[in-house]
Every structure is written in structure tokens, then in C-alpha cells.
Image 1 (cartoon, rainbow, N blue to C red):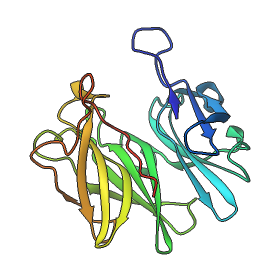
Image 2 (image 1 turned 90 degrees about the horizontal axis):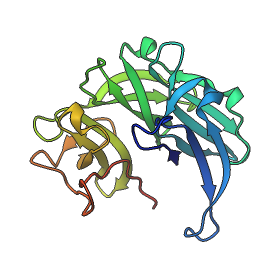
Image 3 (image 1 turned 90 degrees about the vertical axis):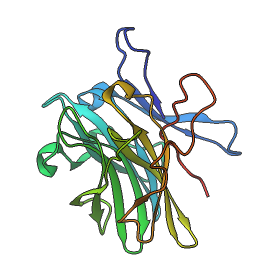
Length: 226
């Protein structure tokens, strides 16, 4: 999970990411953390933790001070509390993908491949569809470009696949949608389906699939534990 402060309170960007562990799924304790300075970053966003065999991988999403743009790195460790940010290797950058930003990775294993869904800003002003990168080892990824584009209505500015779950007929994808840059951080939840996890069909074109009953209704960055 990520820590950030409200806008306008000084160091208000994402300044720290942590891993917490639990024996019962209810009470959690922090076991590891990384601060943005360790990555030479001005801000961090969503990470993705995955177990691969007897090792763990942590995919990091952050804004690098070299060019002020979002990129994705990966760390490996034997335990979730043993990551060393100094060993992070770059996975995707804007220059390598021909985009303005690559961020918020979500990695799933489909057959022999690792599929990384990436929130992609095509230009600094958007739009922000979801792109796909494919790997056979989870470390070196081949860029495939947009696989889930923005919609025509409530999600015409951003469509960010944030969780994928296997169904009897293929896959269900939950995505964060917004209609304009002014709705940044206030995305709502949409639903899509796929038979191969590579080509997606939107089921919530007419409006969000689900919104929060609280405050602005924002509901974003879902995940699914089966």
C-alpha cells in the first residue's frame, strides 16, 4: 500500500510504499517499506507484489527525477520483507514504449506468459488507456500497446485495468474510469470481459459498474483475492 498526504500540505505526493503481512487476513503489520528518495523519485504509485516459485517480485511504479516521467522497475527477494530497492531493474520506460508515462502495473500469469497491464498516458494531457506488455520470465517484457482503450462517455479520459480474475468463460477485468483530467483521483469502477486476457470488451459503457456510497463516490485500484 501507498502513503500520500492531502494536496497542498507540503510533501503531498506518494512518499512511501509498504508491504504488510497478516496471519488471519484481518490484523496486519508492516514488514517492509521504501521511500521515494531511495528510488530518486518525486512520487510513487501502485506497486504489484507477486510470488514466483520460491521467490517474490515487487513491481514498482514511480516518477523518476531524470525526466519527471513515470516508469516501472522490479525487485526480487526470497521473502516479502527482504527487498532491496538498490537492486531494482528497469522494466518499462516512456522512451522505450513511445508514451508519456507507464505506471500502475498489474501482473498476471496466463499460460506460459506473464501479462503486465499498464496505465499509459499517450501524451502528457492524456488520454490514459490500458496497455499490455508480455514476458516469458516476468523480467524482460515486450510492449504490445493499447489493449483496453478509453470509452466514449464517463470513462473517455481514463480506463485503467486494475484487477483481473479468471471466470468459467475467460476473464473479468475491473477498471478505473474517469471522464476528464479534473476527475483525476476520483475514478469509479467499470467492468470488462475477455476470453484470452488480451482482447477486452467493455460491459459498463453507459456508466460505472460500481461507485462508493461515501464522499465523492470514487472507487479505484480494486484487487481480487480468490
